Every structure is written in structure tokens, then in C-alpha cells.
Length: 302
Image (cartoon, rainbow, N blue to C red; front, top):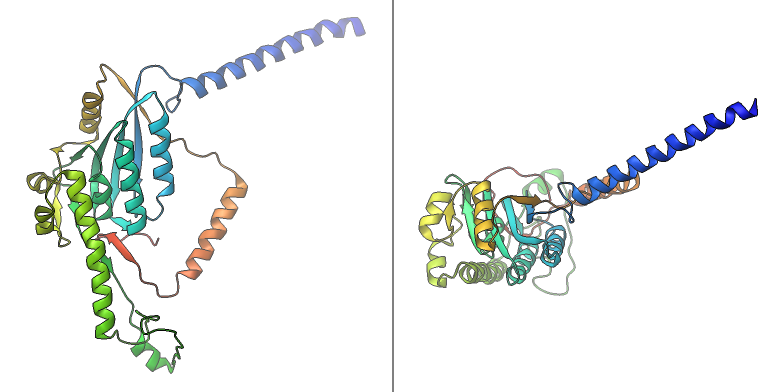
């Protein structure tokens, strides 16, 4: 009886080894020759998506560094669909783009919206491609404050503040801002606005005087931006790909490489959910921040 079972066992072992070999081969093929593989054949262009409010520069700057170091990536496209966002994050991305284009061509492809901080980072690229109807521009700085003193009065709420200096509670929601406080904040905004103007002038190779003429927060269409020298050419994403190919000397077909999406892990999901919940609680307090952002469309909270 045992003699009859032995051939069957051998057959199962052989089938098991075959299945294991085929599975390993499939994993190898997907890993090394898949759409996002770094080991696939053919010329490649990296594509980085900049979508929504710009609140954290780290994912984008890290991907720029990765694509810059990857010798198989010939050029990089920043696909921008953003109303802008934080001053610091926008400046960090701008700086990394300026570093990257010393090694590789970087093209900006504007989607429906690339305003304020979205335009700020586009200005650092080698060339900008926009749709005729893209909403862009909005070269300016904004800072908003919530005033709650009348509501506090109706609710019978008062607030006592002890401070070490005149401006320590500047922008407090329980009182009106003094003229000296307004002057101080306006001076700060003017400084940061000047940084925006100089960054656009440097990236676009325009005079600061020309940039200042339109740096009043106005939004413009992609076609008008081209007339003003803020955009190089009109076209869609595929036109940006064609331009990237031409500028980097790529002939024939090209493979677009997108950043790898992190694998799903339950621990990360739970941690992220808890972090977002905590952030929501914190943001129930009135806050003010300086931003390179166009406020013309509703956007999710930072």
C-alpha cells in the first residue's frame, strides 16, 4: 500500500515545485518588467503628481531625488493640479526642482488648476505646458484670521491674556487687531511676496519688474499666461511628454514611470486614521497661516 502512495507523493512534489517556479517567475516578471519597474527596457520618463493643497513637501522632494539618481530616468514631468498651499512646502519643492534640473530636464504639465504655490513650483521647471483654459497665476500671499469677539460677547465668554511682548497674541480671535499689528503683518506678507516674485523671475528668466506687474493675486487662463511669459506652450499632458522626449533626446517609444504606491498595511491604516482624527480635533481651534494659495475654489482641510 505504501508503495502505491509513493509515486503519487512524488507527482505532488513535482507539481508543487512547478507551481512554485511559475509563481516566482511571475513575481520576477511583474517586479522587473512591470509598468513602474526600474529594470524594464526602453527609455523612461518619471511622472510626479502634485495634486490638491500643498501641505507636505516630503513625498514630492523624495521622489524628485529618487528620479534624479535613477540613471534610467531621462526626464521628469511634474503633473500639477493644485491651488497652492503652504509657503514652506512650496519653497522646498521649488528648491529641489532647481537642483534636479541641473542633471535632468524637468517639465511642468498643468491640469485644470496650477495657481499660487502650484505655479510657484512650476516656475522652477525647464518648461511649462498648460491647457488654454488652465487656471494659473495667483502670484500672491494670503493670511486669514477668524474674528469671534461678538460671538464671545453673546455667549458671555471672556478671555484674559498674559503675554511677554506686545505682539505675542497677534491675530487673536477675541479682539480687533491694532494698527501696529496690521503694519507688522503687512510687512511680513510683503517680504514673503517679494520671495515669490524673485522665485518666479529667476525660474522664468523674467525681470522682477515684469513679474510685479501681475503679482497682485490675479488668476489668468493658460492662454493668457503664455502671452505674459508665465507659460511656454499650450497643450495637454501628452504634449508635455512629447516635449520631455525632445528635450532629453529620446527617440521612439517611451515608458512613463510613476512613484510606487506603498503596500497596504493594517497597522499603517490605523495609525493614519488616528493621526487624522487628532489633527481634526487640533484644527477646531482658530488658526492663521501664511500661504501661497488661491482661495477661489473649495478645498479639503489641510
